Amino acid sequence: MNEREIADKLDILIRLTAIGLFEEKTQREKIYLLSMAGLPPKDIADILDTTSNTVSVSLSIMRKERKSGAGGKKRKEEVNGNE
Image (tube, rainbow, N blue to C red):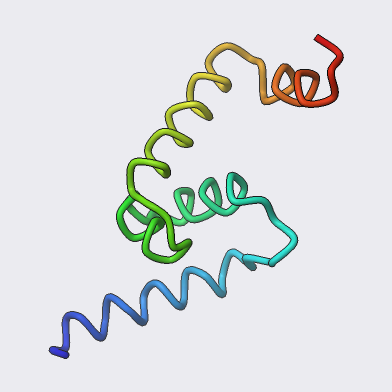
């Protein structure tokens, strides 16, 4: 491993520690936090053991919800059967 790769890995560890990523968080919350920490979808996918496509789709949905003002409320209602 070269110095740049080591520095990149350390940067990821520092970011994870800084945002306080807890196990109780949903995958969607983890994706959001890691994205806010500045990590690209590929790195988020590696950390969460998923695909970068899954991460990109989740981020896209979150952006659309934020624009529409839904904030995930509709999704919660749908899950609870209160459409």
